[in-house]
Structure formats: C-alpha cells, structure tokens
Image (cartoon, rainbow, N blue to C red; front, side):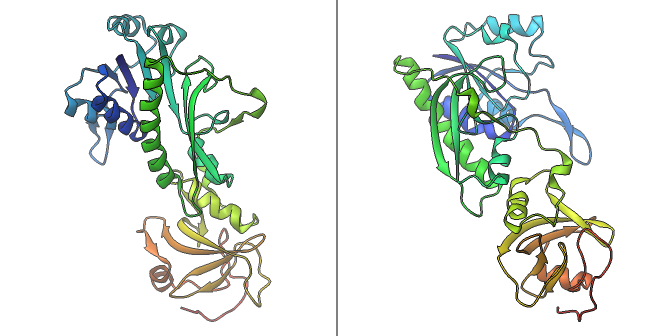
Amino acid sequence: MKIIFFGSAHFAVPSLKALIKSGHEVSCVVTQPDKKKGRHMHLSGTDVKTTAEKAGLEIFQPGDIKSKESVEFLRGFKADIFVIVAYGQILSQEVLDIPKIMPLNIHASLLPRYRGAAPINWAIINADKKTGVSIMYVSLKMDSGPVIMQKEIGIDKQDTAVSLEEKLRLLGAELLMDALKAIEERDYRLIEQDEEKVIIAPKLKKEDGLIDWSAHAPDIHNQVRGVLPWPGAFTVYRGKMLKIFNTETIAAFPGHKPVPGEIVRADKHEIVVACGRGFLSIRELQIEAGRRMCAHSFVVGHRLKAGEVLGSSHIRHSRNDTK
C-alpha cells in the first residue's frame, strides 16, 4: 500500500522505521518545520525528519497542514493510507478525506481512556496498573475515532513516563504492522468508542509538577514518576526550587508526628519526608542552578537537616544533623 507518514516526536520513530522495513511504499514523510534548539539556537529538524533523511524519503514540512497548498500537495501522492503518530498539528477533514482507504493514528492508551496530549503521564499519575496502544481510524474530534486494534501492557511500579513511553512506542510500531496487514486483507472491524468511559489526558502544565506534601505518599510518588521529563516534580527548599527525580514510599516512620513536608531523616542513604499520610524517601534530586545528585551527596553538600520543611524556608524542630 502507498502510505504517507505524519510524525514529529521521538515516539513516532519506531513506527516509521517499521514502515520502511515492511515493504509498503512510504511516499512521503510529513513532519513539523525545523526549530531553533540548544544554547546556540541552531535550526534542528525533528527526530522523524532525521530518520526519513537517512532512508532517502521525500519530506514535507508545512507550517500549516490545512492550507490549500498542503492539501493539493498531499493529494498528488494518491495515497491509500495516512499513518499519523505524534505529529503535532491538527488535521482538517479535508486532509483526512484524502487517503483512498483511511487515515490511521497510533495512540498511547487504551481508548477511550486517556484521550488527549499526555496519556502516558496521566496513566502513571493516576496509579493505573495497565495501559497500552490503540490503532484507530482518525476522526475530526480528538482521539474519538473507532478503534481497529488495541494491545495492553502492565505498568511496573518503578516505571516513569519516560520508561513507559519507550515501551509503548515499540509496541505501537508492532501493532501498526498488524493493523496494516489486517486492512490489506480486509480482516478487521471498526469498534466505536464508549463515550461514557472517556477520560481526558490534557497536556501537562508547569503547576502539575508542584508537590503538595499534604497528599498521600503514594500519590506524590506517582506524581514524581508521571511528570517526567517535563515539568518534573518540584518543591521549595531554602527559597529555591528543588527538583525531585527518584522516590520510594514508606508507610510508617517510628517515633515521629511531623508536619507534611518535614524532613525526618537525612543521611547517606536517603532523605525521608513526611507526607499527609505516609513518608517519601527521596533518592535523587537537584537544587535550582545545581546538578542532579544522589541523596547522600545532597545532604553533605547542602548540610541538609532533619526538621527542615520542604515547601517552606524554616526549621520546625531543633535536631542534630544526621548526615
């Protein structure tokens, strides 16, 4: 089949590579325009563009995929299928009507659960035990089209949004091949989504990373894992932003009735912080304008003391430094 691939983000690369190896004709790769990146603000293409260039594929980078010029350009390929994976622009109905068979999308959730821009993040934040990938027929309303195939995987206790994305992008490429084979053999069904089971997964905002220490420890642990790589979980320590990367939950900590956010232990092994219920062990962290480091290095370098309260600038109790 003749296919036009739409994609920009890292998540889309395995699917493009699978298409290139599949024997299907990838007529064109559509990706976002180059952007200035890095300290020196050099123009840089997307991960998908880099992959397409290496394969010698034709590349199209419109600023507006819905423009008259874009529509006419895409029509010229007479494609059978559009495959859309983390592209970054909304397609008009006029564009979606171009392929002879259908436009397909790979979505990183078990639809109708987690429609939207951040399904991987919210699955972890909400403590889901499983997630997966859906291959769907693209409709104009966001992520609402009928599903052709789904495959689920478990979410490990230590999965972050970064590690889970890696698993799902590979799974998405495998499932795409299965879906294309089914379409080619006309052995598939379009299954409408149950609108009563829809959950929205909106794009993360900076404030989604702010830790509320009055929350339960497992909820904060899930937040830390779910908001990586951006915005990252953060709190305030001595008037500066403190990013937190790696945590474990502790149900109880003997001998303490602390306030939420209070550091109850700071030594070479860990930093333990009281939450609204339970305790959080911090293993990796980074102070504003500093480098990322393990708990022991941070305790030594900043003379962190038990009794200090994260999210505040004061010390609740007078205790000896336990480093």
